[in-house]
Length: 140
Image 1 (tube, rainbow, N blue to C red):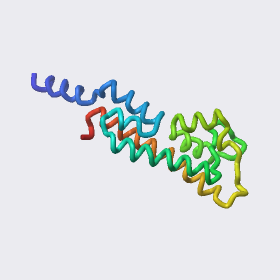
Image 2: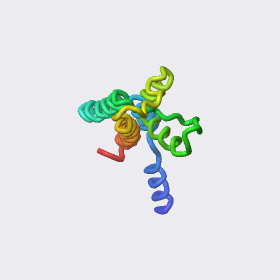
Image 3: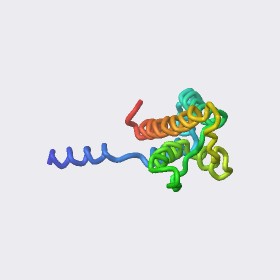
Image 4: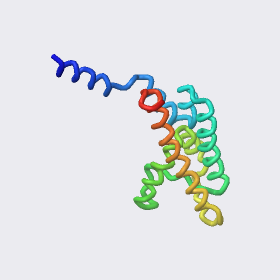
């Protein structure tokens, strides 16, 4: 009888609240929004602001947004595209509007811009996971 009770409590601990998945998706789509929705106003503003700022600086420095479907630049560009995709709707909107689509390798700051864009995406992946954990109750 006690074994059954332990098994039930273990399966309940493994379940994740439905709101946590939505919060994680929202956090990926709009940097900082997941933390704001989870009630972490300061964290949402600071961390989301960091992603938005890094993304904007990356574009201003002449960074190039890599595509997930362009094999002309080599296999590593797929990885870079996955990094860029982490910025969520910022990336989707930029690709749709062709902002950052042209490689500006002749600019002295273009490589810095590329790195800023990639790190913004990677940081946003971490923020989405953090917002998910907060809503799931794994983090207080």
